Length: 208
Image (cartoon, rainbow, N blue to C red; front, side, top):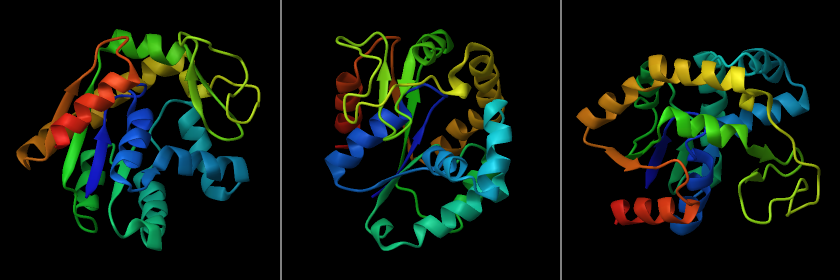
């Protein structure tokens, strides 16, 4: 089964993709994580991507598509996968249809004000990539998995968040209609503080 997780920045795509990946026993492919990996490694693609990400802009299609095709060719991607963070534009979706069959698109629908609240409190581990929120019970400034000091990503800062939401509504939201017309869209309504467990349960019920 090939799935796409669609939603605005901060809607919980990464968290839910990881949970459903474990449930279905298929890998998650996060273009955002892949791009950040290139940035950490200091590759040319990473350098170009960083300029766009830090400014809240989308990374150019040719960079993302090239990286994605290379990753999809590896053996662990052959029995199904979850795409998190791609496609982001109609052009990307149309290009994706030429080389990958998508079964369902999980649309996480979250109010803009809830997204701002979520991202303002999000913290990530720079070493292992684990994600946390300052509102969680028992929150610590250190990663519970590896102990590293948690950080706030540049693209989670308020001014960048507002720009990313604007970009999403202009360029990514039209994908909702695109996949609805294909009969693949599954919309999950998420309130401001719904727990990850509750959202996961809704997604599982919809897929079943």
